[in-house]
Length: 317
Ligand code: SF4
Image 1 (cartoon, rainbow, N blue to C red):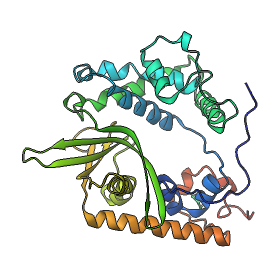
Image 2 (image 1 turned 30 degrees about the vertical axis):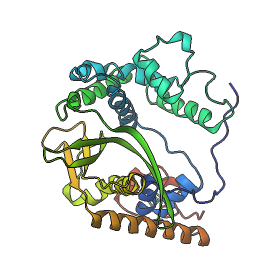
Image 3 (image 1 turned 180 degrees about the vertical axis):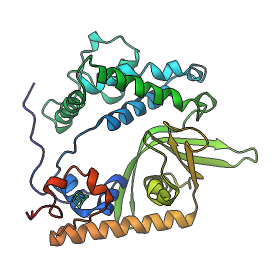
């Protein structure tokens, strides 16, 4: 294997496209955004993040199956162990994996086969780097790994208590949307887009996002739905349709809290567009002055960059 390119350490220009997650970083703390996006410093993975990634894989691939197959949680559970195998061994030889097996379906989606991705590319290096991080979280065959797989399987199984995936066919999964809005290029990936027709013949679009963490507290609802509101703006710009509803599916939780919904209207779309433009303008001003405010808050205690952050050290960057 070729040597891995080192992660960028020198400042890079602002990205040409703004995603809701980068916008959220900046809103939380411009200094955090500087570390992650301008310097491109990696943030380490964690077991909860790995569980989230693995559960998302199972939910996405579940809808490759027929409605009848989707009645059985075993269909989704069959992706847990192969999904982890792909996370820790990103590239496999086609001859080593049974065609149409869960592992092959996952690899086909991401082109994770030996020889299919340029070995000199950043994506190739990133895939190996992420895999090494995942492997470092728990040793192969360890009790920690067994617990991780059991816990993830419980999340996947719990999903069947909050939705009936055999009752509908998604319009799209992991849908990438990109559009210009008031001079800013926005983009993002929608976990699942559903479309249905009401008994009165109205067509309705619903944007759903799987969350493996805890249900947000009501006072943080604005923040929790921010990403989905940006997706609704994108859907309007790209497809010309207004989403009827945004849904956060807290797949580890129990009903009635597990599904949190927000109805969409023009006021939400307009205020979200304005907010993204405001964030973009503030990013450009920070870049022009090379001033990235270290905005302290409760989340600093979970910030990977705290040991080097100027707010907590005497050093200046
Ligand atoms: S420790 Fe707090 S202030 Fe410093 S970069 Fe992280 S979030 Fe920002």
